[in-house]
Amino acid sequence: MSLLARTPLSALDVVPLRAGGSTADALREALDYGKELDGLGFQRIWLAEHHNLAGVASSATAVLVGQMAAATRNLRVGAGGIMLPNHAPLVVAENFGTLETLFPGRIDLGLGRAPGADGETMRALRRSPADGNSFPDQVAEIQMLLGPDMPGQRVRAVPGVGTRVPLWILGSGSFGAALAAERGMPFAFAAHIAPQALHEAAALYRARFQPSLALARPYLMVCLPLVAAESDEEAQFLATTMFQRSLALVRGEGLSMLPPVADMGARWSRSEEQAVRNMLGAAVVGGPETVAKELERVLAATGADELMFSSNFYHAADRLRSSRIVAELRFDAVLDSAEAEVW
Image (cartoon, rainbow, N blue to C red; front, side, top):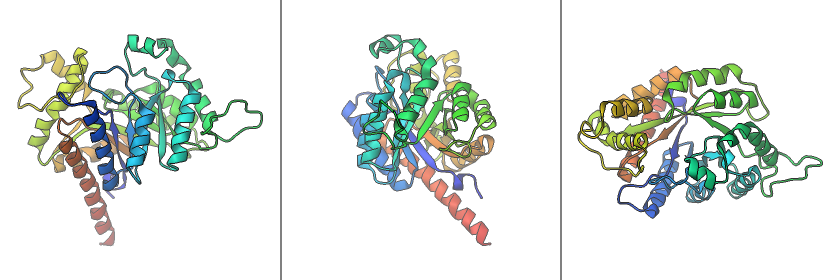
């Protein structure tokens, strides 16, 4: 059977703003995106947490998760993720316990230890760089608060206690992989951030995995940048929005999405181009045939149990079309596999 045929597909949304667009536009387009994915049979959509980033509207993550869950019917909705050192674990447990109570069986809680912000913003969040060192303890506290009510337990998340919201560890290197393996938790690797570390982290996670009550075997989800279009040429053109956004990140500029351009040559230096291409080393860009081959290659190389896509397009309609293309590719792979089994 085709690897793509048996692999669930999901999406990550940081709710990016278009240059010249409004925050209201970005939020509305995020909800439209979730509705489209729901109809296409995607597994889940996650909303990220970022603060004080020009061009990014995913700061109030739990609020966005609730709105997305209300706008969809079958899609799992979650945080990808809550940057746990920014928050009191009790408040996180109450927020996601409330969401799980309102939308039973549809809420995920991905946990990360990065600040999602610069130093000044970290201070505004009342945290310090050293706060990430307590991340394993904070994860354990969240597990306790969302688990069953224990005799003598003095602090409870209400709502939250007993909801057992599925918890994920997010990571871009060996730390998250090792923690997820040690705790027997599913692991979401950010190949859209650190593609060079993907294979080492995946291997470490599987090698050290310890079964738990939540998970009997390793479960790895890999997040990739994706630009799918009707042809390779069109996809390469549309991908220049993603290139320009990554270039802005390299330069420390605002991250509002810019229109695609015919040629990136005059927009970056040789070193900047190399930095962007390294950052996007796991990106899948192309027409249907190219995308299908690349996704099969990624699945074979990583053994991923699920794929998640981070997609940045200037026009919302192009992002919806990209999602439809990859959903159709998976559907075709399922049909092809079924026909092969019959014959």
